[in-house]
Image 1 (tube, rainbow, N blue to C red):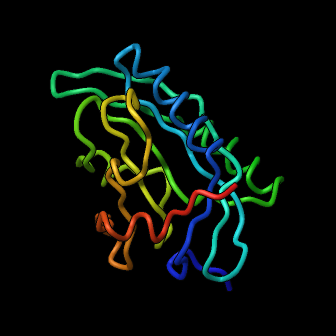
Image 2 (image 1 turned 180 degrees about the vertical axis):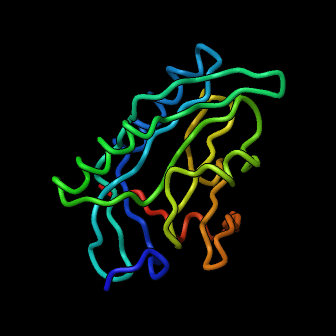
Length: 163
């Protein structure tokens, strides 16, 4: 059985990174956070290939304590149906923050990906600069259902940009 917790390597293209940066930065120009989802397929029990960037319909919001972004249940249903119809699965949520990259309490408590071994990537500064993954905060959901930050030295071992 394929299990996200077994994944040792996530392969993705520059196109995936470029589309991700573009989508996050578009919202960032309005000073809004934004979400994209990375989807694809297991190549082996240990290797996952990202070939799709999903930009869900989303609503940015502001409160007295900060900003955020919300994806409705109806939109999540549409995404799940598309994933099923296209024989793909999510591997990571990727979202932007206005300043430093870190996992907020909201990020911890309301993720869009919820399987052990999946990833949550936070891109700093509304993706205004390079989206090189070592410059982002990368978290992985562990078996205790906690988001654990991936060591910076491990990011380039796990995530491989391929032709």
